[in-house]
Amino acid sequence: MRITWCQIKTIIAFASRPIQGFGLVAAPFLLAALAFLFVSLRLAMVTPDAALVVPAGLAVVCGATGGFLLVCGVLAELIFKTGDIRPADFSRLTAVEES
Image 1 (cartoon, rainbow, N blue to C red):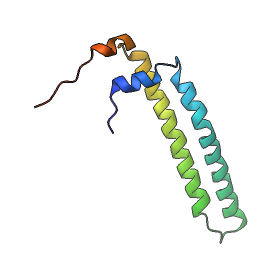
Image 2 (image 1 turned 120 degrees about the horizontal axis):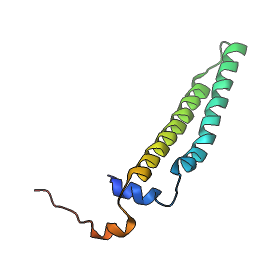
Image 3 (image 1 turned 90 degrees about the horizontal axis):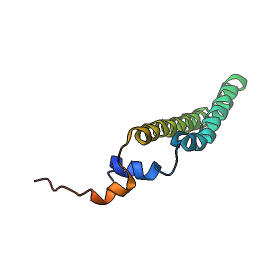
Image 4 (image 1 turned 90 degrees about the vertical axis):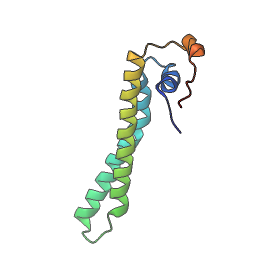
């Protein structure tokens, strides 16, 4: 599925500060990443023979998800602030067939 800049602009046009919305969604993932990182470090110190793959893997996945959402928020903010197409102008956009 290909998303164009106009579609992204339409999706984020409802918010004046899209990074705040993405940040609110990313916050639980980042907190979970810190919690899983703490659990994996504690397990490593208390019981050296413990399997650390699951908590460390969850920390990486949650951290990557939170970071991705923050980057999406920054990109959405950039598109929202620099975009110059108004929703009323979308009706005049037409597709051009490439040959």
